[in-house]
Length: 320
Image (tube, rainbow, N blue to C red):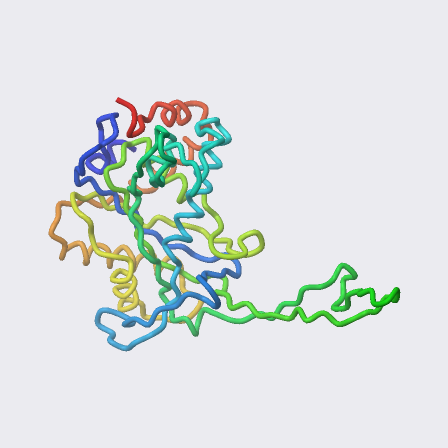
């Protein structure tokens, strides 16, 4: 696996204080496996964009926010670190972050309190942007009405009035706009100047995260599929450009899309877009990609063999 990713990660064990131009771009297709809600305030998050690069018609696409993705993946990673005692309990996101654990070195940390060792901040070395649905908003979304039942199991609730108990109707009807199951989003997650252990951590978080979005205790089941990994010395094209390229290539543009066809079109689009980039690159795909994913799976299956010690020995920005 190290050989397959060679050139994309920092080989020196110390924290890279200066930018080295080592990029690993993870090309992702995220498919919803249940009803899912991606929203900021009310309703789904949508954007009006051109349908394709060649197709100039405007359509509305659903957005999977970069914050929603990273927040979910980060929680999964921090669970792992906590479970194997690789993170101090006092390290909490948006509060008192240690700046030393693997999560802090990869995804960054906020400024600590004055006088503490972690005073300062580190921005994330995982570069993300919004993911876009391939198909239009109207085709992949719906609205579901819900009601909040009382403890009686009905829409009635008890109220006491002047020593009398009355049953009144609850005003608890509402609506949720959601994304249908089996909808595909295209995303690119970029790892910049990470060391090998940090790359393993980020890849593991992506592959182990199974829920995104609002109400994720009941909804939001997904599967992340890595279609290709691009190793380069500069940042490449974005997720919207890739989504539009895939749209142009698809012959059938109806829900539900065939996964194998979508993956084939994504890979074709990646290669064509790379031809226009001004950087040195190599692609990890197909058989090599399967080997890489199988290795990650086996490493996480028995983390006590090598992974724990590998993670434990990663130096933070404060270590010499």
